[in-house]
Amino acid sequence: MSCKGCPPYEKDKSAIFFPRCFQWIRGACTKKNPGNVENLHGLSRNVMPKFFDGLELDYMHRLGPHKYITGSWILSHMKAAGFRFGGLYTFRLTNDVLLTPTIIGDIHPSTQAANLNILYYPYECLRLEATLQRSSEKTPVDSQYTIELTRPCDTWSANFYNVRKDSGRCTLSVMRAITQHWALGGEMLLEWNSPEKLSTDFALAARYSHHNFAVAASASRIGLDISYWQRIYPQIQMANLLAYNYITNKTIATVGYQWNFSDSAVHAMLDSDASVGFMWTKYLNNFPLQMGLSVIMSIPTDRFAFGMRFVVDPSGYRRDN
Image (cartoon, rainbow, N blue to C red):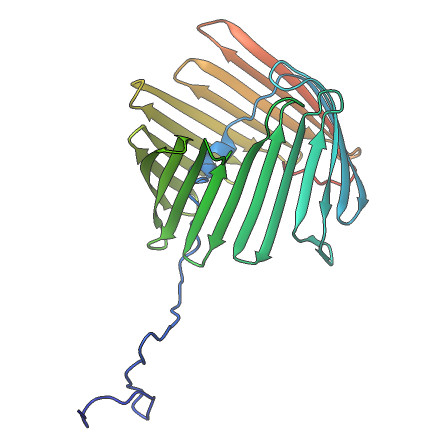
């Protein structure tokens, strides 16, 4: 059968042609990558204070462009007290830019508690990450493995938590930019407590964002999470978080602020359970020292936690943390 009026399979002067079977034609995407579902509320969470209690003394020393050693001494009720030492090592280095694979770890000599993180980008769009943690010598290792593929308009992620034959948990998620401001996604949870029993759950995620504000929401059969972030001024950010649990029928709302100065930063929060707190961080210009102060108080129970942190960092590696 022939058709002289049909367009040819190859381009001609009119630029009209039939594509061949199973031919891959790349398109152009002008939308920015929306990130993954795990960091859907990341803008709002970064504004909230990260509290600590007791006394923390940290030191980081640079041995080379890609080698660091760390040491810390902690006196706390929330974290394991005592001395820890560790380091950071990167295998590849281009000029002054650290590339992967990168290994970060530390260990508590007396209890043998250890943390290990391995980050590797075999390709620019593919992230492989492993996080291992052991709280003591007799406890099993807690593990988390991540495989993430980043494309111009979407991100595909797979996370595996303590995956064993008799128990484990896995999440599969995708987040895609629909327009310049809208992004939609979903996540599937797989969890098993025995080889024969597998439970599943699903969640939907959405975000609407501009350069100075963003609204995000995620919903599942367990609960609902809503966040709002806004940059009020170049140095001031505000965030709101709302979480509702269907099982316990409990709702908690949190309001947070972040105020950045030239050499310091202030974070503050207030939630619906009448808990209030703030965190202050100061960088000294003439000495490589970072000082931190943290206070959180529960008004109904009249209890509070107070903490101080000192970080000596001649290399300036942790200045933005």
